[in-house]
Each structure stands twice: as C-alpha cells, then as structure tokens.
Amino acid sequence: MEAVPSSIAGAMLSSLFDYIFERLFASSEFLNFARLNKWKNLLPKIRAILDDAEDKQTVSRAVKLWLSDLKDIAYDAEDIIDEIATNALRRRILGETQMTGIGSKVCRFFPNCFTGLNLSSVKFSARMGSKIEDITVRFEGMVEIMNALNFFVRSGEGRLERVRYGLRSTSSLVDESRVYGLGMDKDEIFQRLMYVEIGEIGVVCVVGMGGMGKTTLAQLVYNDEKVENLFELRVWVCVSEDFDVVRVTKILLQSVTKEGCRHSQGDLNSLQLQLRDVLSGKKFLIVLDDVWNENYERWDVLLRPLLAGAAGSKVLVTTRSEGVAFIMSKCGGYHLQALSDDDCLSIFASHALGASNFDGHPTLKGVGEEIVKKCKGLPLAAKILGGLLRGKVNDDEWKNMLRRKIWDLLEERGGIIPALKLSYHHLPSHLKRCFAYCAILPKGYEFDKNELVLLWMAEGLIGQAPEEKQVWDKGLAYFHDLLSRCFFQRSNSNKTLFVMHDLINDLAQSVAGEICFHFEDNSGDKLPASIKKLRHLSFTRCQYDIFRRFEVFDRAKSLRTFIALPIDTSSSTASCYLSKDVLQELVAELRYLRVLCLNGYRINKLPNSIGHLEHLSEDATAYW
Image (tube, rainbow, N blue to C red; front, side, top):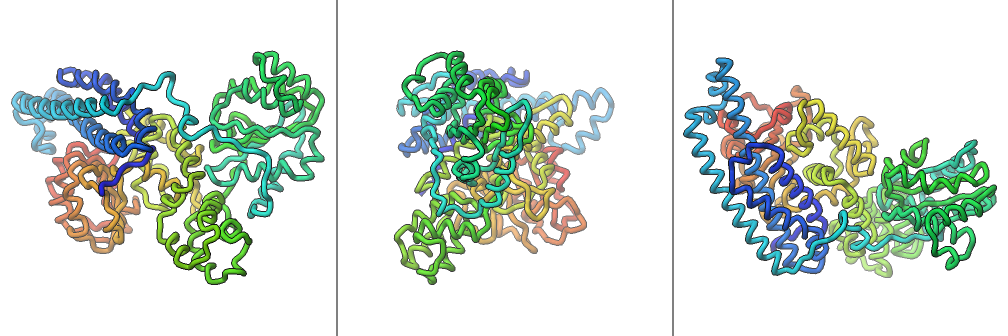
C-alpha cells in the first residue's frame, strides 16, 4: 500500500509554494518563458486552499493522496526554476569570461556548457518549454481535482491552529504521587521566586520542548506549602497560543476577585484599572502556562497593572521558546532537562501498573525498561505509553509495544504528538523547510551547527543575498531560532555539538514525508514507498560500500542530496572504501544533485562525469 504523508506535511508544502512563487518574481530570467505566466495564476489558487486541505486530509484519504501528488509536482517545478536560474548564471559567466579572455578555460571545466551559445540557448529554451508545459498540465489537473474536493479559502492572516488542535487548557491541580524526578527543579524555581527584585515584577521562565514536564513543574511549585505561605494571592492562567491581553486580563481579574460574571465585560482600560486596584499592595504569584507570544508590546501591556503589586510579587511562565523567555524575563529561562530512565520508568509503571515499581510484576520489568528507553527522558511520553498498557499484564502485549515505533504509538493516543505538531506549525515558513530537511539526520546523530548551515545553504533553503557572509549569517540565525524553540538541544557528551530528541526527529520525518530518507544497513524493509519522489538521501558509511547497496536508489533521478554520515571534516580519518561504480553509474546520473558529501571514503579521483552535475553548490564542495 502506498504510504500517505502525515497531516502536517501540507504545512511544509505551503512554505514550498511560497518559495516557488517568490522565485518566479525575483529574477528577470524567468520573463523569457511565457508559459510560466500560467504558474503565476495557478499557484496562488492552489496555495489559497492548502490550509483547508491540510485539515481535511486527516479524514480523507483522497485529500492525502492529492497533497502527496501536489508536493511531487511542486518539487519538479522547483527543479525547473533551478535549471533556468543555473542556465542564466552560466550565460552570465560566459559573457564575463569572453570579455576577459579566459572563456576557453571555463569551457574546458564545463565541457557541455558554452559551445555554440546561440544554438544551445535555443535548444535549452525548447527543452524548458516542454518541461514547463508538462508541469503546467499537471498543475491544471490538480486544480480540477481540487475543485472536485470542495476546498474553501481560509480568510484572515493565516489560520488559528486551535481550530485543529483545540485551545489547550490546564489547571493548577496535580497528582503528586505520579510525579518523579522534578525535586531539584522545584527547589531551584522556589529559590528564584524568593528573590526580591526592587521596583519591578520578577519573572521566572521555565523553558523546554513539548512534553518535558514544564506544566507539571509549575503545578508542583504552585501547590507547595512554602509557596502558599510566601504569597498572599496565587493565580493560574493557561495562556496557550492565543495571547489575547484582554482575555488574559479578564481571567486574572476573575480569579483574584472570585467574581466571574461581573468582570466578563468591559474594555481593556477598565479591566486593567480594576486589576491594578485589586492587586495594589498585595504580594502575588501569577502562573502563565504555555506561553507562545514573542511580541514584547503585548507583554508590556499585560504587565502594567501587575506593577501595583507588593515587592516580591512574581510571574512564573512556562514556554517552549527561549525567545519568549528573553522577552518576558531579564534573566532568560530555566531550561528543564530530560528525566533519567529510572524516573521515566517510575512514571511509566505508575500509569501501566498503578505502582511506582515492578514488584508485583517482575517478569515485565525488562520489557518495561526497554520501552522507556524509547522515551528519551520525556515524561509525557512515558505517561502515554504507560496508559496504553494500563490493565495489560500479558508479556506478549508488552513485547508487541516494544517492537512498534514510538511515534506511531503516541499518535494513536494523542497528547504529545499534537503538542509537537503545534510547535512545528508555529514556525515561520522559512524555518519549516530547514527543519524538514533535518529528517536526513538519523536519531541520536550529533552534528555541528556549521555543517547543518552549510547544507541548508547548498540546498538553497537560506535564500540569496549580495554577499555570501550575509547568507551565512542568516543561516546561523535560522539555526539559533530553531535551537531557541527546542527543536535542537546541546549534546550531553560534547557541548559544541547538537542533537534532536528522538521524537523531534520523528516529527521531521513526518513533515518531510517521502522526500527525505536516511539509509541504514538494516533498513532495507523500510525504504520509501516511492523511490522516485525521494529528494534527499543520507546513509551511514560502511567499511566497504559496493554498488549493490545503493542499487535501489538508481530510480531516484531527482535526488538533490547524497551524503555519507557521519560528516567529518578531517580527511586524515578517511578509512572506508566506496566502489567507483557508485560514482560512475549512480551519482554521475543525478543531474539535480546539489550536495555531494563523500568524506570518510578513500577516494583518489572523481570521474569526469561529476563535472556535468551543474547544480552542485560551492557550499557542498567543502565536504569532498
């Protein structure tokens, strides 16, 4: 059965459409192809309904398949745009080299590029015209199907993600008997709450990826007896994605006064005046749970009535974004770390067996320990997996769970997967494609940020700028933005390297669908359903790599990335061997290849045919 992309693949497709449309208007070389004008009419029509299609694919297989085919066409369209841009660059270089008298040297380097310029230009235009026409027909076919599927255009600036996931709601109540591993974190937060900041409201931010236990930690602190004695007033507000200052102010006022209906009306000014009067001179603790807002002005407005509180008043914030922490707190955030396997095991057991240990079911402990390792320290994952086994004490049922992918298991129950998907949906368009590209990295792979930025640059994911340093700086900014949003985390073994949590890696694979694939020796039965749709391929080097290992990818003619991992910039460590047939019969035929990384292999000479791969980027050649 053909694999169908997940319900979040459409979000990446939206960003791809935006990128294609931007390219069409960005350069004059596309004006020579009149057929592209049809794209300028077709693409906005399709782009306008992608939000609705993304929602409907959760209940309609027809919509899922439509989106899958559409993504394939969009990538083919991008390939054509790249060919046109590359040809324009080639002609520009030729014009410059002929003027400087070094054209013959350039022609020898690119043997097929510069002979018979006028004739080759005519042939190129004819070939591109045929390809553009083919893509246009395919786009028109997608529009016909689109009309039959009865999509509608979403109004307003983007959609509110709560339409799909529901506005998250939390309360201050917590079952402390099922909480493990947060004792030291709780003590640290309490110490920060005790610190009195003169003349301002102290803000403490807890930062961590979805499912890490931020809300649970805030609940523990909120209900601690010492905290109750420390503050005259305590208020809990679940903010979620909708940082509406009026809504949050109403909740604060209703919670403090215990008079819900009376304060349900009124404009922001009257609400804030009332809240200021109620809080005046009182020492309070306000918990703002699950904050996404990175708009300083909104935070500044919300803060104004809180300044009337007594010295020592505090606001405790939980968020997935370090950017939120920097906006709301001058001290930055407190980063919540993953739990130990032992603590996760206790959480898992409490939900699966109703006990904190396996004393009553010793035969299940070994399997339970292996299941918990999949959680990688994420308490919500341990809780959900434990809940799936609630009341089940048969060894076979536990072993069956162990054999399944953790992403599939968690997606069945909900909870953490929607939380992670929501983090992805909150990314700006340019970061969505960069993150999806990370699906080529295997689980647990430790990477250098400079390596990843170079790959993004080579793939054209950063965009263009007059100077290469500007592109590089933009790429670093992209990386740090994803890092601040907890998509990456520092490696525990080497603080100069980074890694993705396993579930974040699963998220990247879910987003990328069939376009990205990491190839292991033992993954022969897990190949993409459609090799032809594959665009980015990475693989773990073996001591001796022969052509047979890669033979199946001979059908992946649209590959843009061919990377051997781990990437190691030290050529002195090269100790593996790659069959020359892989280069001559596979790599040399990948005419859309942008990144070729074969570091770690003992390669003395590249075949001349590699020189025909005109899309290879300078940013990628650093790895050869």
